[in-house]
Image (cartoon, rainbow, N blue to C red):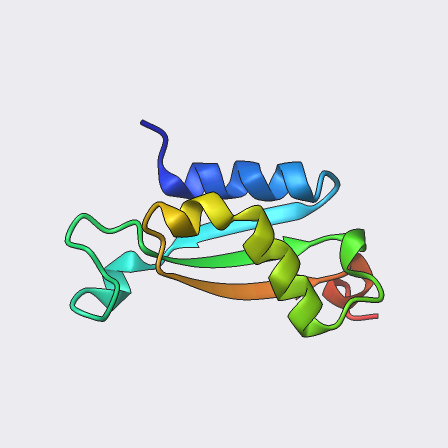
Length: 93
């Protein structure tokens, strides 16, 4: 079975084909918290740098990412920390 982090990265690359995508499993830091499961794979940090975010506010960017990851949320992912930037924002422009 594919690890959830790999599925998240694949889904984000499919939704944002030219994006730079990084996914980290933070589940170990949330053991015992609401939504955490003993086997992990529930809490993630995601960084996506994509030109698709140009002209989108923070809420719209988050909604676009959440839409791409609907299946993962339905399959037990509990929390997602997002860093979503355009290439210009990521470069500090």
